[in-house]
Structure formats: structure tokens, C-alpha cells
Image 1 (cartoon, rainbow, N blue to C red):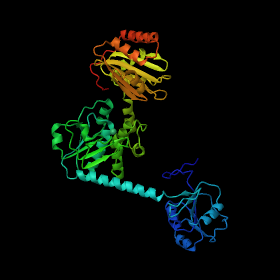
Image 2: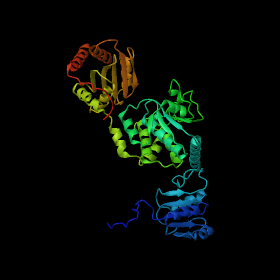
Image 3: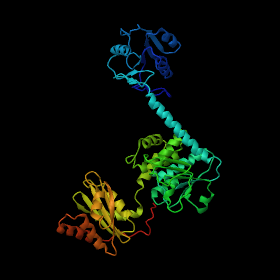
Image 4: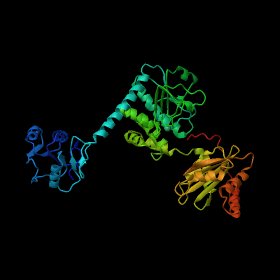
Length: 487
Ligand SMILES: [Mn+2]
């Protein structure tokens, strides 16, 4: 194949070599203009001599005047696509009879509310739909103006995230900071708890924007306060006096502020900020696009959970501007180094019963051990549910994971343990916590098996318990100094 000259776009095999426009209504000339603008040759058949005259100045347009009743098929009718600019139904049918079988037949009419004839497509979106889109955009721009106006002339705007901020809060905060910077302000981004997860620490260190823990005097000094991905009432004592609240959690009765944008149907607050930024045509740099993308995918479990079409649209707009490699790094950084010994111990001390895996870790420094190992064991072929239990802080804690396909592990947890402790969950995740009140680890094993398998024969339950107890006699992982989630 001959090489294409540089700078020449690859030919699109589906692109039409020319288009054919037939009829005489008011849409003919604008439609010709539309295609001429795209340098596509146009063939026109019209009964109206005036249209021929109007089209004469257009380059690449060949016009043929046909009889007013469109009664005879032109001998030189080109290949599809065809655009019919005719209002009259009988004439439309007559022209339709000229055409070879093709799906590429459009009806171009001013009045799109009229039902298009069967088999014809419309070239333009329905006007009502078009109008809705414009109105939605105008509403978004009005919101952006309002939010930006609030920041103009402010000395110290403050964007607050609640507690240990999750990636959605970080994405939304950075999005709002970008808007406010475009309005000439220099906002602080602060959280009020501690960042726990390793991935979130990694995210904050990746972003150049300083995002830190709130200092007492900063709240005092702020002359504009926004709360994102939360509502002021989340702070039980001393809720901040917020001027701006942008969130997707269910509305709290006590939420009020001069500017409130709450969208419960959205999967993430980052989506709301993405809409603001995109509608206002504010450039999204790579870091911002990365933070917003990560916010959307973590809150919606990669668009699988509670994702609205708005979240999917925002993701679509963002994802090729985001740093894929960094996002992959974040996604993979799931297992703290200090967990590896527990994972190894859990794997070699599993008890398999049918399609279930059970592990009892004895005493653990953190219940995260059970969560991590349960998620991992569920990847085993043939295993549909997992129970990882341990004793922590004088409680028996059992973490349930299931594929959610054949059983409901939340219900299983609650049936087994809600009478003696707190238990619940949903299809694929469950958790039970039973106070031990000084009972031993050995007794916690009996409690676990006897309650979970009430319908099992006592002999089999006894064997189950003996195996779990004997596993505990094996050398167990040495607790790391600290379960700090660092690399
Ligand atoms: Mn969120």
C-alpha cells in the first residue's frame, strides 16, 4: 500500500463520497451548506427553479430540476445517503420509491415534532431535546457564575472536607479550588481528620496543590467556607458555617447555605464539579482530571455502583486527560506490606467447606486483616463465599464476602449473629461483631461455628471447631510494630 503524504488524514472507509438531497422545502439550502462546509460533493434534485439559482454559487453542488410531482426516477441517481426535504407525505412516498434499499434515508423538515415517516431518520436532534440541552447548560453556567462570584474579592476562601477525606472529596475540592482560582482567589483545601489509606496519601502527594489538616486559626480566618462531598451537619459538634455546600449524600434537614447544590442521584461529587468546569470551559490539567476521575471511580466502584448517566458522561470527558499510569498505581496499591504475613498465614490455615472458605486468625491488631484476606480468598475458583474471623478488642469480628450471585452473605451474617451481637450487610458483603465479655479465643471459635452452621450435625461442627483451634496452635504472624499503611 502506498504511503500517505504526511499531514493527510487516513481515509474513513464509512464516509460518504457524496450526498444526495432531494426536495424543495426550506431545509434544502441549509442542508447543502452543511455538507459543502465539510467539503463533501452534493447532488440536488429539486422541483424548484429558485433553489437551483440559490445553490448556483456553492462549489461542488450539482443541481437537477425535476418535474413538480417527482413522478420519474432520475436515471443518474447516486448511491446513498439521501436527504429528503419534502413536507408532503404523498411526494415523500413517491421519492422513496426511487431509492434503493438503504438505512441511510433522512427526512429533513423544519417541524421535527411531526412523527418522522417510518424508515426515515432525522438529521438533527429533536428540537425539544436540543432545547433541553441548551437549558441544562444555561442552568449549569448560572451555577458556575454564582459559585465564582462568591469567591471574588475574598481574602481567604476555605474548602473543607470531612474527617478522613476520600478521593471523591479530594477531586471535588480540587475542582472547586480551580474554579475559585479562575475567579482570582487562592483557596485553602483542608480536612478535619487523619488521612488513613495508603492510596489517599499517595494521591495527595501526587497533587501539587497543598491539601492539609485544618488548623484551628484557619477556620477563624476564612471569609468564605465551602463543604464538599459532605454537609455541615456531618460535624456533630460545631458544624462549620458554610457558604457553599456541594454534595451527593442524602440531604440532611439541617443543611442550609447561601449556595447549595445537592444531587442525590449522582454517584460522586467529582461529577458535579466536572460539569461545572466543562460547561464553563475551564481547562482541566492532568492532575485535576486524574483527581476527578479517581473520585468518580472510587465512589462508583468503577462505574458499577450507583453510577448515573452524568457520572458516565463525566468519566468519558475526563478519562483520556487523566494520568492512566498513576491511576493504575493507585488501583494496585491495596495491600499494606505489614499484611503479607497475615495473608500467608490465612492461606495456609484456611478451612474449605463446599464452596466456602473460613479462616479464624485468633487475635489481630486490626480487623483490616480479615477484610484484606476475605477479598483475596474470594478470587479462588469454586469459592462463592468467604468468612474471615478474628478477635480484636474483646470482640469476635467476622467479615463475610460473597459473589452475591447464589447467596446473600449479609443476610447470612445477620441470621447467624444479630441475636448475640450486631450483624448485617448486603448481597456480597457482610459483617458481624459479637462482644466476648472476656471469653477466650477458643470460645470465639465455638461461637463462630455453632452460630453460623446451626443446621450442621454436631459431629461435623465439632470437627470444624477442632481444625480451627489446631490451626491457632501454629506459629502466627508477629504483629508489626504499627499497622501504618506505608509502603
Ligand atoms: Mn462522594
